Length: 280
Image 1 (cartoon, rainbow, N blue to C red):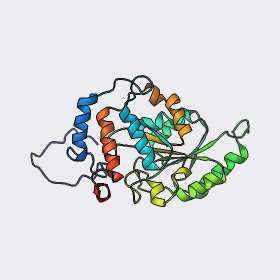
Image 2: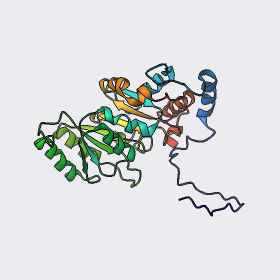
Image 3: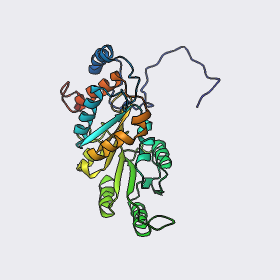
Image 4: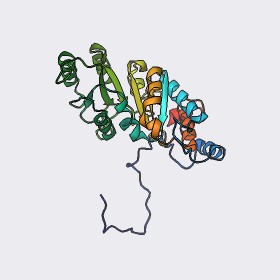
């Protein structure tokens, strides 16, 4: 909280910063990505000055999207210049009944509200409560008409940032299959930080990533950069390229930012600076 009476002491101390989410240290001003970023800045400039749907798609964006999809083990991915907007401006495209963990991030809550969908909340990481709500949604359908929902979307986080708890992914996937629902996993804090390969919660639990319908993640944490991504089936990603407010109206990710992420993903995958990603 801001204190108007605070003042500097004039001294310096070496401290450990626990208020940052630069989890792997890639947000530093030195390291293997800095030289590449400088080169790309001279080649492409600092900004793109357009949206992805107009004249703002760079070859670097496609390279990053293909790399993210390969890293996650899914068909396709799309990247955005802002992590918060990746949730809040894309969830409205997925019209359905949303079953949301009660401790989901504000960006998820806002996106669900903007969608106009029916929203049901289940107790945090409570599998029994989630099944109860899914069963009611399937049996009773829409509140007024009682018609069946076209689709039901379960929305959870990989790691809940304020609690540090890890989603019970295997159990949720089992329920998703049982009730023929879809699953959206926000990996803002888990991608790069969980799993033997840094591949997030699916990697951590040893689960086939294609059992998750939509992976969301940000590049602000483990990747030391900015922006976000959605990844999953190619048909869904192609739909978002046309219908996402963030893709149609939002400014494209700047080239230096994109190159930073490309370099970091390649390091985590072991394709650049062998051993560096595993050590971090």
